[in-house]
Length: 307
Image 1 (cartoon, rainbow, N blue to C red):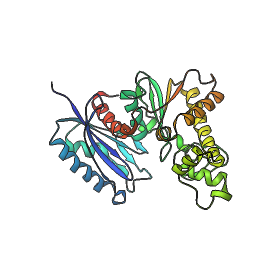
Image 2: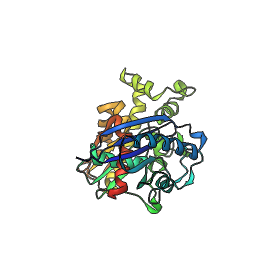
Image 3: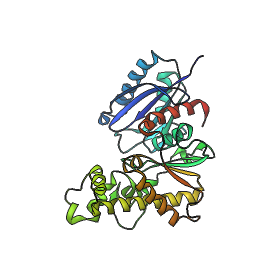
Image 4: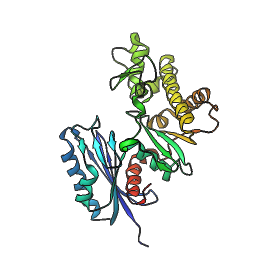
């Protein structure tokens, strides 16, 4: 039996990973290295190509996929300047990798890639209309509509983190009260400083410390998690009503904060949505620590399956 293998590159501002895997989402090999993103795109691409060459000595690879932060034109595979990747402005990544690898290549926004992976192998299997909310360092959304990943005009992914959620609040990327300022994992520290400036305004605790304090019964920390969960629930209600989704999957924070945090999100969504949340389930992402690797792999499959 000749098994097909696919090559994926997960690009981050801190670390990168190259993976080889199969159509059923099994990772056969993996390499990770520091991004050193300040060097710019040429050096980072060369790092990946060196790792890809090593992996291709072991595996006959069919296609390659890249999961990378936006903004980007996923239709053309052009990276348009992610804030965590200096110098990645108008980089025709798909064409450069096609030429270097002599393979079909697809490039996707990292949130869309996660949605695609969850839809193919994770908690989103069987759902044709779903959203994946990152709830990680940033706050992004990936959409599967009608069984296919959604890109907007110009191949752009929706940027829900920049939507203004409240009139007041912390600032994220120059927008006060944005969804990212309330809903990301990183926002927990800023929320603590904003909500309780006398206690935490000078040196807010880390997100992990806030979670630990909340678990130990600290009411200030619990209030931070409550506001964060309510904000995520509001976004879920918008998405559910606007897109009539079957399922919303929550990323990083769901793993770390657990079921009680998710229940607050579900209740808030039910309170705010038109049908009281009856048609849209809210679950943690199912692929856990493997999600980032599988996301790049899912994009590689999309390069030949057009999903």
